[in-house]
Structures are given as C-alpha cells and as structure tokens.
Amino acid sequence: MSQKIATREAYGKALVELGGLNPRVVVLDADLSKSTKTADFAKHYPERFFNMGIAEQNMIGVAAGLAAAGKIPFASTFAMFATGRAFEQIRNSVAYPHLNVKIAASHAGITVGEDGGSHQTVEDIALMRSLPGMTVLVPADGPSTRAAVLAAAEIKGPVYLRLGRSGVPVLYDEPVSFTVGRANWLRRGEKAAIIACGIMVGMVLEAAGQLAGEGVEVSVLDMHTIKPLDEAAVLEAARSCGALVVAEEHSIIGGLGSAVCEAVAGGCPVPVRRVGLPDVFGESGKPAELLAKYGLTVEGLVRAVKEVLDRVK
Image 1 (cartoon, rainbow, N blue to C red):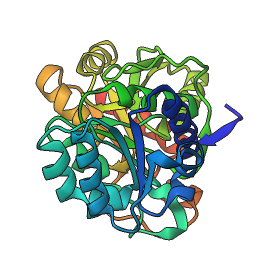
Image 2: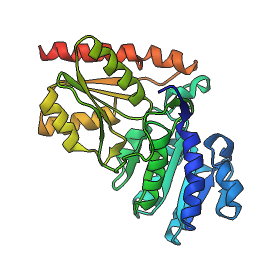
Image 3: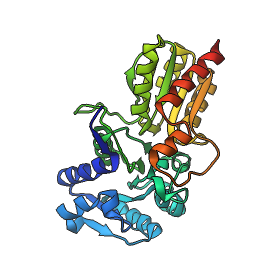
Image 4: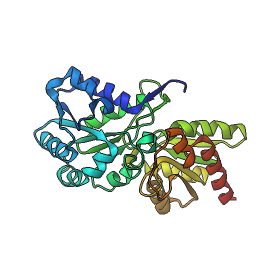
C-alpha cells in the first residue's frame, strides 16, 4: 500500500476513459476543473465540457436538462457546495423526477485540511442517502474510483459519487471487483468486523493487521456503496462476529454508521461502535492532525475494536 493517489485524480482519468467509450457522457463543473480534475476531460472533449461558473444550483439544473435530453451528465464541484448549496436542485430537479445525473463531489470530509469547517462537509452522505432513489458511492482508492465512475454511468438514475482531496493508498489491483450494492470482503475474522468506506478502508486494513499480531482476527468490509446498502453482508458480519465497528470520514450521524445500525437493529442486534466525527463541524488544520483529533487513525480503530469487544464480554 505504498503508492498513493487521490480519488479525485482517479476520477479525472476515468472520465476521459468514459468519454471515449460513451459519446452521451458530458461533464459540467463549477469553475473548479483543476481541483476536481475534470480539466482532463475538457482537454479531450471540449465540445462536451461546460464550465458553469461559481453557480452550483444552476449547474445542477442544467445537468437535469441535459439528462432529460438523453445525455449522461457528470456534475462536479466540491462536496460542500454540491450537497449544501444545491441540495434543493438535487432534490427537486434530479431526484424527484429520477433523472440520470451523476453528482461527482470532490474535497469531501475533513482531509480538505486548512480550508476549515466551512469547506469540510461531514454531512453529505447523510443528505444524499436521505433522497429517494439516490445511489451513493464512496470508493476507497484510485482503482475502485475508476470502477465506480464506469458503474455510475451504467446506472439509470441519480448517483452521488464522493471523492477526496488527499492521496490514499492503492488497495486494489486492476480489474477491481466492483458491484454496486455489494460490499467487498477484504479480510475474514471471527472476533469482530470493521465496516468502512472511502479513505478509512486503508487504515482499517492496517488496524486489522495490527490486531492480528495481538491474536485478534477481524473481518474487514469495504462498503463502497452506502445506498443501496449491502444489508446481507452487514447481517452476515453481525451474525458471524457478534460485534461491529464502522469507520467513515463523516459525521457519525446519518452516514454509513447510521445505515449499519439501522440494518442490524432490524435484523441482528449486536454492539456497534461508530468511528467518525461526533456532532461537530470540522476545523482548520493539516489533514493528519485533524484525523488524529477525531480518532480517525489506525490507533483509534484498534482502540474501537477493543472497546466493542469489551462490551461483548
């Protein structure tokens, strides 16, 4: 896991590939193409790229119109502005008529870093998974981001794709086994199961290795699809392990942790320890410092597993 690539970088490359495969694909950006990496698509397919300016609400409305005309629009901006500023347009212009718009939001979570709480969206998954018919994808690395982009283009309906700013370890070999709505089991163990998404998956694998060295074997699931959630995998993990830890770079309210708790409450109640931000906004700081502050580290994950196992005892 030495090589690192930001999921936004992989998104930009995947868009170029997808543009060559499907002429119906168009890309819209809110004057952030260098940061979201849609500039690569603009260079290759300028006639299918639209810089909408700093006007995210209008961008989503235009994307809805393009989808209604038979195009497959990927609308890109920072996650804070995609889900926060344009929520009403996503709800009423995209989700309500179930249009084929893909919202690719970069710079999600606290690893935006020094931009601070105003730009660190830790509630976007909660907002998007609350919308009827919305598919929510949070890939863990570069190769799985490519797979998610290609899969999103095949889905008939709205998709929210969550991407990050910082480089993350490459976990998967190509071709990636990626099926929307089906978790990837990366490790099998009987003591507990750790379910994670996005940047936390790499940390979870490190934590699982450390725990194995202490004689504690845990399962690891990459829950790259938050909605539709792979409830079968969640319940299998709950039944086989009896204790769960959920890790996400997001608030513990409304995100993956909440989705997992909803699933086990109705199917197999077991102790669940959620690792994420408590009921707070982020703040300015270096990404590593912020992750450490909120316990989103290998050490924090190891501690969370031990805490949930103590509850089982």
